[in-house]
Length: 66
Ligand SMILES: [Zn+2]
Image (cartoon, rainbow, N blue to C red; front, side, top):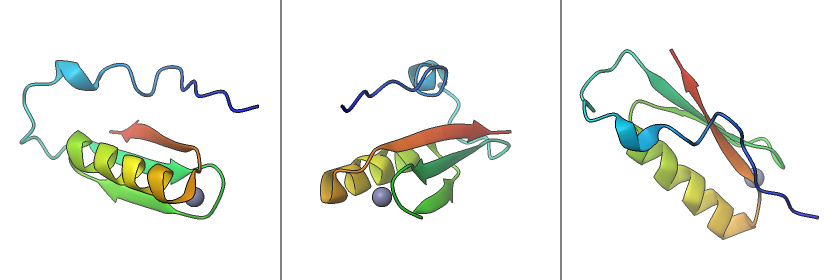
């Protein structure tokens, strides 16, 4: 069973129009292997998440770090 729900983690990206603020980071973590990275932009984090998920079929989550 593969349930893709990440409550509270994926919902708010579209709302931030100020992308230049570096006071916030995005923590990309794979739940199925040891891959784990930090990004300063939601776009980069989302791209990394998609890339890893596509390559491996793993479930990857992105958490915001303040
Ligand atoms: Zn993985």
